[in-house]
Image (tube, rainbow, N blue to C red; front, top):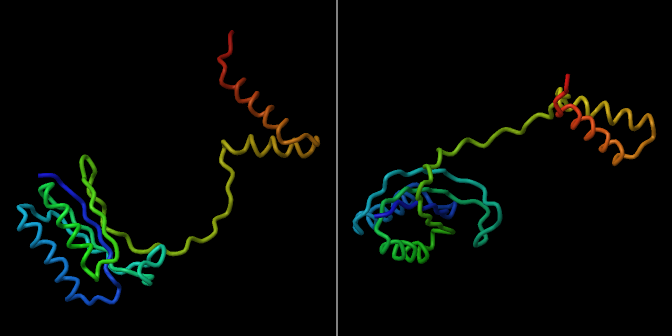
Amino acid sequence: MAEYELTYVIQPDVDDEKLADIQDRIAEFVSGAGGQVTRTLDWGRRRLAYPIKRQTAGVYVTHRLELPAEAVDELQRSLRFNEDVLRYLVLTTDDVPAPPPPAAPAPEPEPAETETTPEAQPEAEAEEEVEAEGQTEADAGDEVEAEAEAADEPTQE
């Protein structure tokens, strides 16, 4: 018996009762085929990256399953004919860790001030020198590389 991960997206207008019914039907199918559902993650309603069947949102659910390989085709067939399922994906999870629970949507990041790190300071100084001397960027890049190579070489005493 192999371990699989099943992720599917359900239409956004499905109520909680229908969602629970779909999850129960999948669990019944898996147990009827001699497998078991080891973990279920309900990601909730999320916006889709692109419209699917004229829907712009969907309810995401992920299951970890232990299932005989012969039953996977039948599971996919039942998901394909379910009108409430927009998309699904079944993956084998050989040596793949379980996914973490979904995080809440992140707030918009505030623009941060640019800081110069010690590593970036020599480059910034080199750029200032180039502007002062009127050299091209290619010439300045060669000088910075030569300085870096000289710093990497051990000194002989």
